[in-house]
Image 1 (cartoon, rainbow, N blue to C red):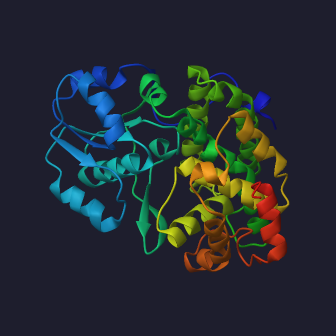
Image 2: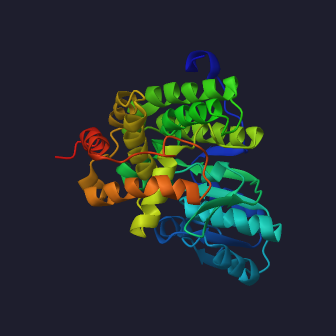
Length: 344
């Protein structure tokens, strides 16, 4: 099954979504009071365009359960909560919507994650990530001007949560065959390949900064989010590439832009899987995204330490079965990864 037969016309399913410009200002004419969960950069751009100020501006970033529950207790009574920014803003806004039963609107400032199209919040808890909650926004507002204001490299990095289908599908097949995973689903597995076909087709227009490229990428995210809920899991798009990202965050105590970190995981794990690593490299280059460790602000030592930690990490966190389980990180594996990442 290919993108030509699956992804045609208005193929994407999922949350109600609008594309355009000045979308939030228009929406707020119908909303008397609201709280925003946001990052400083997108808020600085949107705030002057809005018809009236919010009742509260809540900084995004901390996704620990204790912090989110503090926000639940302290957010004033409002008619809506609006997430503006990246994944942590989307996830925190989802939690407030779910816990306070307040209508939700999502305004992504980057296509860096599919968090605005998924229903659960990715909590940071006990050194790992767990998913909880059930959030359905009134609408996702994709503002082309807002996203275009971000550095181009960060927009291009938004391919990560679609490119992850390449390695996640392999891991799912591995786990299902071993009887250690979600049952194999041919339709969902075929969609993994269809998303990759669509991503490869849209990558040049995303690199060029076109509205069409961005819309097509967001539609992939939208359909993936819907499919995760319909299946009851994200196995077709989340695997060892994400687990590398989680291991990296635990080992280093920091993170980089999610899509770039996941793409790094795809390049690494597709190599260790023996799973056509040339394809994700080609798609990343078509999108002109950053993959060089120096550009990403990542050291080889951080990569190596994260890889050595992965086999124990996935067991401790009870993550889905993948190539990471029982992975031997020896000199041969490290040299293969160094070559894949073009580390001198």
